[in-house]
Length: 384
Image 1 (cartoon, rainbow, N blue to C red):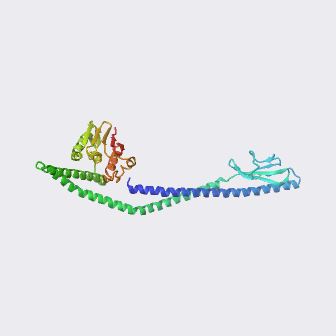
Image 2 (image 1 turned 90 degrees about the horizontal axis):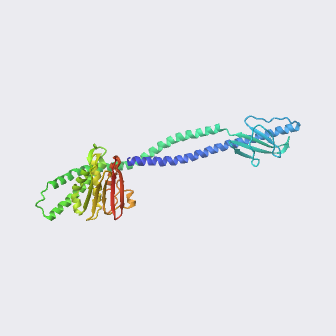
Image 3 (image 1 turned 120 degrees about the vertical axis):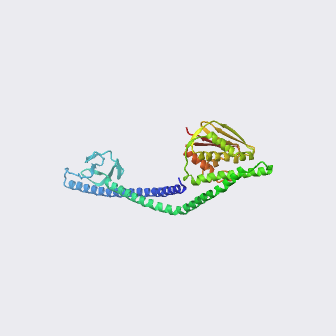
């Protein structure tokens, strides 16, 4: 995933996520407020109904009539005496909590009205009613509609803001990428010329000092050539046609050790090799990049007169050195582009990023064991 795309996604997630949380909280508060208003309205209506029933009781009492009705559609009504014994009821009620004037229980709201004057022996009027959820459903649908339209609007605004904010970054990245491509392209000709001149040079009649100078030229040129290959892969790998073919890992390892022989001899390193025949279906150029980066790092970070161990089995390829080593903190970042593990040794931080990319492409697992001053072992666990 490109860095600009990743940044855009992170910005959108953080922006929309934070606004989504805020909007959800506001929607919840609005829903609860509307619900409270509906409950308050129902409470008021139930109190009016209790007063109406009280007036009816007074009327029947004044007329000395014990035959009275208090049924009202939409309400459940019960009458109790001063001992809280049920006198009459239009519903099968559970135990009434007379200590509360208004409360909810099992989806219904109960009003307990205590009468000052007792008519026909009635001391308490209890009214029960369920909240009209259809109105709450309308509120919920309204919130959802606002949320959907609001999210679409905020998504558009977030996208536009992200494009505006990331435009300078994208322009800088594009300029840097163009510079890398142009610089890489321009490096090819002089590097090739130096390598060809070195290969065809007559070395028989040179003294020891001149040979040492040539060795330094060879080392510098091959280092520059390796950097050129890394930058070429980083800049042009999307445009280069690669072809995977069965290839011997052992042969490529031996070839690259021989290629880097001058660098190895210059640091007086011993290279121990335990290689079995193992093939992999891979483009040879990518395998060379993989091995060159691991081998060159092992050479670079080894102490003079040190040792490098190359082990190839059916299961893995291991490149081990006994040099500077890598701290636990640095191990978290060494496979990220432009992260160099050791400022004393320099480097662009491109090589291990390329190793990581190639390994992911071919389902090769990277294992690293390292400690400062004890060296590093990179083990590439090969696919079955």
